[in-house]
Length: 145
Image (cartoon, rainbow, N blue to C red; front, side, top):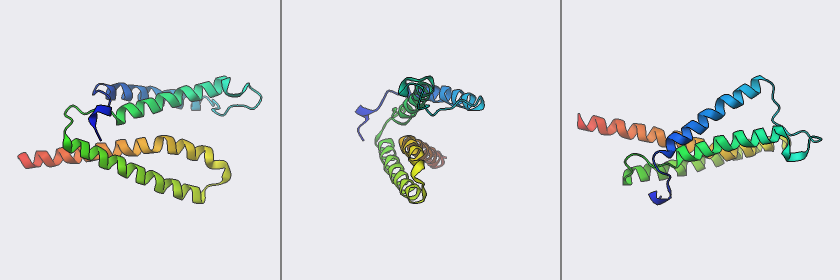
């Protein structure tokens, strides 16, 4: 993966901020009983519920993309390899999960399957990449001691 397609380092913090803004908004809305599903008689996709859902989803996805695809402070070949391996494993995990869910899912559950398939690979990638970066930094510290 070439680093010329990555966002600058500071975008990681912007993405974290967007994601952290999304979480309390959605939790607060769910606590109030806000229904995210558009009502059939409320004007289609341009009703308040759907626009709120789209806004919070875009906040979350933009934040996750910025977190996942921002450069590290020091971007070298080893980090590029860790990024590529993590992305490959995230796609594998996502499709295994998708196949298992599709086998056991009801026909009414496809909306949730699509949601999971949109943000799932990003979350898997971020977790795997950060875990590999953590392990890599731990190994390099032990080598220098």
